[in-house]
Length: 257
Image (cartoon, rainbow, N blue to C red; front, top):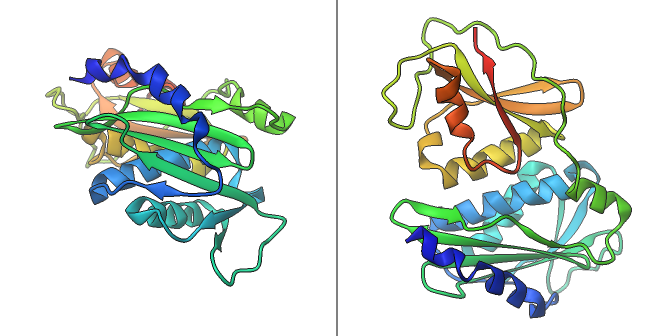
């Protein structure tokens, strides 16, 4: 079933160009699916628009669970969120953000974010396991600032992750149904600009990968680069297998002890 939706991804992404930047809308979705879409949206926003220096003007109506979740998650990530509505004085320093969430075909969602003049879209499929991304984010950077273009194309930080402390007595076992006992290899995700960006990415990924939901990550820092480490596996090959399909962050393995 997952393969079927890929046939239409290119058409669905290009067909979003006509979405109005003046209105926001989100189709009704179950709470867990709406939150998964929110978490993935915020993870992409954090990558492109650093929360500490970004003020956004976001509509207060028309978004349902997605709109409510987006405003809340952006505040938690550190954004200065200004809600637009009747009686609210416009803030010229704030960047307008609009969203449009629809279901262009059965068992799918399309999220379109318009931040200022830039538009970002992503297609998701839905099956018995939940929501999964059918493609990466499609970015229209026409007229974007050099800083935004640099962040969108920024290579993953090459810095090696710091050593992981020796595991305590109650170690966290491997996960995902592989049947392994706790070992000495951990998965390492690096290249995040801040801990808030790493946490937003983890929340989004854990919702899209159910086997990660019960795992407790370790958020680490090496210089100006932030990362995530998790799991303890018997072999480096088992740990590295968890990197399959990960594109938004550099994924590797480190010794856990």
